[in-house]
Amino acid sequence: MADGYTRVLLPGSFRRRPGGLWLGPAPQLQHIQVSVILRGPDQELHEYVQHLETAAPAARKPMTSGEFEERFGASPEAVDAVRRFAANNGLAVIDAHRSKRTVELSGTVRAMSRAFGVELHLYRNRQRVFRGRVGPVLVPAWLAPHVQAVLGLDTRTVARAHIRRGRVIDRGIEPAAAPQGFTPADLATLYDFPPNTDGKGECIAIIELGGGFRTSELDQYFTRLGITPPKVDAVSVAGGQNAPTGNPNSADGEVMLDIEVVGSVAPAAKIAVYFAPNTDRGFVSAILAAAHDTQRKPSIISISWGAAEETWTAQARQSMMQAFRACAALGVTVLAAAGDSGSSDGLARLAHVDFPASSPWVVGCGGTALTAAGGSISNEVVWNDPGDGATGGGVSRIFAVPPYQASINPVSANPARRPGRGVPDVSGDASPVTGYEILVDGQLLVIGGTSAVAPLWSGLLARIQQQIGKRVAPVLGTLYQHPSAFRDITHGSNGAYAARAGWDACTGLGSPNGVALAQALGGSAAHEEA
Image (cartoon, rainbow, N blue to C red; front, top):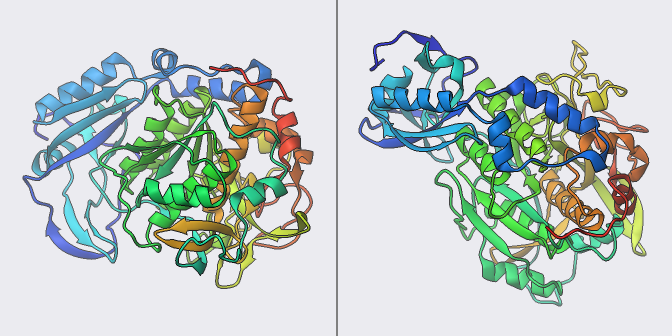
């Protein structure tokens, strides 16, 4: 190491060799950026948000980002230690955030490799060329107590969009096009979203790890549905950009699905789309950017991306968890899709659950298959379409049973039969057979997947917050206290798990009864303007 100090392994940083074709060493003089995630009073923060979870909704008061920084942020000593480390190793500090517990460093591949005791190489897979490393990250012994993670040295893809594309309705957007799925507004009606609400006064953050949108196309979509187009901001994080490809089969589909669902069911809410690279650094940075955004002040974060929890490094999972605890303290509800590959979550053996939906501080969103007649729901079962995907769900191998699931005590279908955090918590229509009518790159499509459920629930919570006049985070404890506010789904399976009365590892507590949920989360108080 360039500064001459003894190096130690950074726990949880070990990486296996990435898949793909090895291309050779990364260019040594190329400048790259990494995020050093700092430790803080984690036990105190954990206890604080657990107290919030069990407190009466009326007693919860969200912290400001400044209050969070003073009570739970990284210490000035930790930030100074990273600055010293950077100076010793020829790296530049380009930003430091005590509230986000993050210091951003810049330097050449050569300097970063020496500073962190790694070798960086280039690889190519079917998607892109990326930078990878093998083994652990090393840091000086004197710095180690301050550091939780070093993210950005390795840029392999960390998550996938949980979207399932159905059929093309029309390659244009003529009003005469025969509907073959539900509009998001149809589903808001079927699920009895609170009347006379539209999300006014709320801001919903959407995390995207690729793709983009065109405002002109969003305007076309909403105008076609008779909805005033909502205000949509694109926010660049860690080099990510709003970059539409023009290909409806690209990540554009995820971006447009998320925005069009949120904008249809909560059209008066502000929408902020945080674009970040599909890496562990990008994902963590996007969540922190939304949580601590003092300009837009989102109260809800919708995430439609994820991967099996075992595919993450421990340091990346821990950094995400740190960000989610911060969200709870700041009064920000996070919702994440539970996956579209059934109980296997796309892995070859055993049952697995998707992260970040498996985080105990995230509302995991599962999927149903819904049919309707005469303006009401006629049938709703677990989404499991042969060849078209199935809802994710199961029991975590990483996270213990959280207090709000103690009476349920979810148990894994795997041979060890271990209890753990059960996924999902809630559900909604996700079948691409009768899914959501969405406009993407000039094509009107029917799209499904649990990635539609997270923005649908995000819009519902925005409308509930508008009605009751306060934020609902942290919301999971309250949801589990009011199972009657859900439509219980009792038929179907996602592979290893079957639906049953009450909570199950396919659809959680069930799909929403919006009016009942509004009452459960705080009644019908008039909205208080911020």
